[in-house]
Image (cartoon, rainbow, N blue to C red):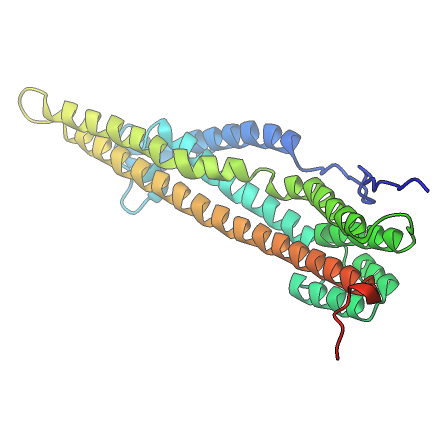
Length: 288
């Protein structure tokens, strides 16, 4: 009889559902956030009521932080946009990763799958995936379905069956992980450029401050104060945006790693159980 070669389905027994939140979401949110921050800068922070004599060219009223931020200059809307985008994409990633995790904790789900596999209850493990839902459950279910298929495949060697199960898990993971990592590149980019944009505002502010000192006679105190305010405000906003972005990026990366680890654990349990279940008496060590 001709030996049959294991073929792994490209569909991975998992429906590849395009995420409604992706590139289109980013292309819409980024310009909208920029427009919103420009309008906030002009009409909220730049409201004449925030300044002495109702004139934005004058000093802000004592204790009026809106007017103080307005003195940061035209770089402020850019920095506000970066800060706003961090919060938007952090919320979006949190919702996506929470949905991918499923209804229960990943560790508890993996323990359930391992227990079902030890009991040789494949149908029960598949049912647990249906209850759990999410990306991790989708990948594990794909592996379990392939496991069940390989149990009823008499023409393949055990090593080929194990390879087929592993391949199925890998391909299912490759379908799910991009959805989890999407938009993280935006957060990491903001973490890198926020400080640099703030530094641009800082340099521009210091240029204005030294220009005020360079005038003949008495220095222009208003221009000097505005220049220093612009430098410090841009520095603060840039550092704030970068700090929040770094924290968010590291947090979501660790969560994705946790999901990946759960998939690896479940995959290892499947392979180990399948290998033990199909170990023939001839391959078992003999005892005297």
